[in-house]
Length: 190
Image (cartoon, rainbow, N blue to C red):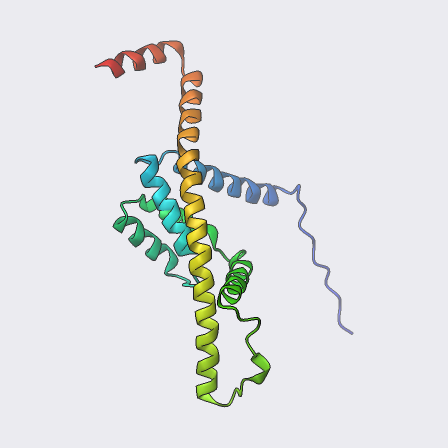
């Protein structure tokens, strides 16, 4: 007779779980601070986020970041912002994003469904035809959704970046000691 082994459920209050949560919190905080400290004009950073988002909405796994950074370099956008923008697609969001993009492509091309049950899976030419129809539908959807998202992200970033920078600046001024503020003020004039 086999013995049943009980698997211990992770306790959310255990030190191991707390370490894991604090590790994620530290990573996100670092990433957030890094975004706040990006050098460059708000337009360049917004361009980077926009092209990164555009590249991230295409099903080019492993190439999204490379394409985003290359587009950012070509359009004089911030390369780190482009890499961050590609994170819109990740293992948690791939499926919903590409289903949505495919549905948009179907709607734009006027195709209700792709007849999967009518494909002769033994015929190479029919298989290629089905694959090209599927790929074209997805690419059209990805392009339209990516362009719409990129334009939205550009204008949102263009508005948000100065807001976050001024908030960061006001926090910096309020957290420094009075003698440091006087010293900073004197150095700005020279």
